[in-house]
Image 1: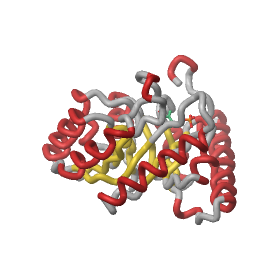
Image 2 (image 1 turned 180 degrees about the horizontal axis):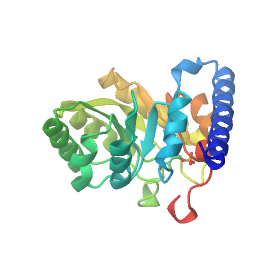
Image 3 (image 1 turned 180 degrees about the vertical axis):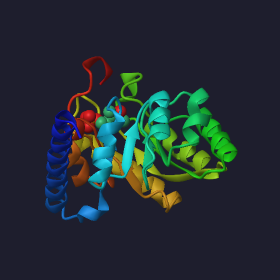
Image 4 (image 1 turned 90 degrees about the vertical axis):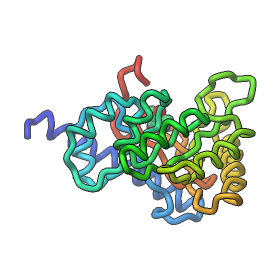
Amino acid sequence: MTDGLRARADELATRLAAVEQRLADACAAAGRSRSDVALVAVSKFHPVADLEVLHGLGVRAFGESRDQEARAKVAELALDGLAWHFVGRLQSNKAGSVASYAAVVESVDRRSLVDALSAGAVTAERAVEVLVQVSLDPPAAGEGRGGAPVDQVGALADAVAAAPGLRLRGVMAVAPVDEDPAAAFDRLAQVAERLRADHPDADRISAGMTGDLEQAVRHGSTSVRVGTALFGLRPPALR
Ligand SMILES: *Cc1c(COP(=O)(O)O)cnc(C)c1O
């Protein structure tokens, strides 16, 4: 290993330990067990060498937001037990590709995408887990940070649950930029609770990123998606 790679490996180990400490503290403060909260390493824009280091440190779940990049990493990394989470905006014409490698698609926000992912999963003869992405922005916010409006989550979830090849597992959200994340995650927890009444298996809440994982854990997140704290900054234009 070159000195540069060694230094990067040391940095990643230090960053992972710090994230683990934050998670342990957040779980303790919320009276929850650390094992109730999964860590997804959001590796978008970072090289496969970084993923190999984190894999060596025990990380198995990686989050990607662009099909082309994710597919290249999937092809290049021959590592045991990896679970790829697709967390980005997904165009329907990429759904077949994503369904061929993703363990979990966290960003399902519309009916047409359900149909396209289902067709892709059936073709690939795979079972793909799905989270419905919920918009926590006010209705007037337009595109916001993505996701289905709260009043459409139930129908979308029903469609996922009925779709061949897909397994409805819960909800995902990104906190709005201009609101206290705790309030937003509290609304998400209520959406998740209503969903579980109809779909008992849909018990996952993917919430919390580098800036707000403590609030998310306090409000019931079962999976945090951490990029910057684990890897450092992404190129500014691509964040
Ligand atoms: C990039 C991204 C993350 C990671 O965000 P950080 O603030 O870097 O931890 C999490 N979730 C989604 C949907 C993302 O696109």
